[in-house]
Image 1 (cartoon, one colour):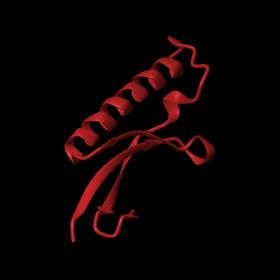
Image 2 (cartoon, helix red, strand yellow; image 1 turned 120 degrees about the vertical axis):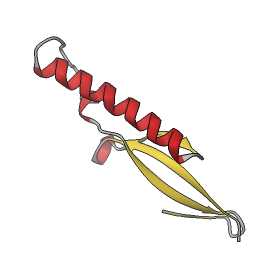
Image 3 (cartoon, helix red, strand yellow; image 1 turned 90 degrees about the vertical axis):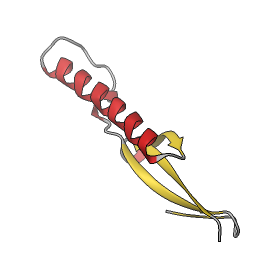
Image 4 (cartoon, one colour; image 1 turned 180 degrees about the horizontal axis):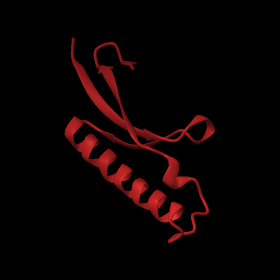
Length: 79
């Protein structure tokens, strides 16, 4: 059985939930998510301290990582 894992970086909630990026290496996914969340924290700080006017909810979306297993032999995906 040939299984591969992919790491999907997601953010948002409910109707705003979306995939930001897909990686085959967990470390790369973690680095991407960290960069996204660092930018999010910076924008949130600027918004809360009046140094930036935020017109969208972008800064409120924290990225997380989902691990999916691809079963190549059976052509299936498991979350």
